[in-house]
Image 1: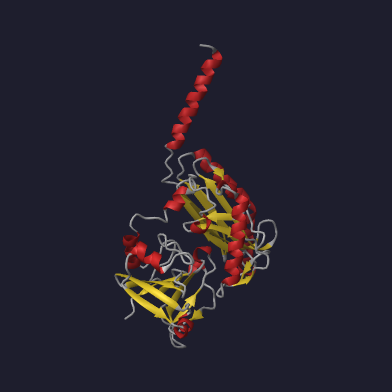
Image 2 (image 1 turned 135 degrees about the vertical axis):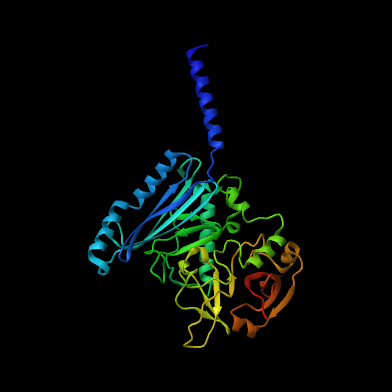
Length: 392
């Protein structure tokens, strides 16, 4: 056998072995841990990937995150906070991460004195394919990225223009949508804006969540990155899964549950300061993109009373409830997929005004001590879901 042939055979064998090793890579132990440093009221948070089976990939991802966050400069700012005490501007970092199969998405928000000498707030986003260790971009997720971005910009413009309860300070420059500042989560894809372009009342950059079902026509559905994310919103028995969720006081993709404390448990999602009111409750909106289109109801008490703040209802204007989707599904779709409801309700104009709803009809599903209201407008299209304690 010639030397060239031998070398070719060896290279093919190595490639085959590498392919087998890649296919057998166990990512079940991979996770993000936060190395947090605090001084007075300041903190620096460094996300670190641990548990990855390939130390080279793990090290490269961690080095890239550290470099993009400019951690050396951040630690210098933190040291100054120790010297100045509470009088300095300081630095404040918060993070969120999502890991599903091969997908790793990390978002870090930095406020106060920023590395590089500026003051304000900014996001840093990181998206990696953990099988290869390489970053992925929007073009890796969509069959036609230009068509997808155009559709996303239209959806966002419509959503902000039509939402009378939006908690935003300004959104005059939502176009063009940033393409290099995004992250994936359980629900969909979140775009993170610089606060010089689009700002919340809190001073943070605005965000917008696009649900997977909204993006499904444009996604590479067979991609190993995307396929598991689309599969997680589906179930073989939606009626059974729905009853389990109702009994547990949860909705799919919503990171809160009935009975939790608004202040202690939901405070991390940054409730807006000024709630809306129904005749019996306060209705809180949130700045965190994971709570976009979701509001929490707490009991409305007399002035001067300081009661506990249990969440008594969760409202969702957009959600994928195992194929039932506000704005798309009808009451007929609901009964076909979930079976006949346990009860019915009608909301007239006056009650709609009192309860911050839309006039129309509701199907009621119950399990345990809880009830799910699937509410449709007068065209029969689902516009809102409310998970609440059963009415006495």
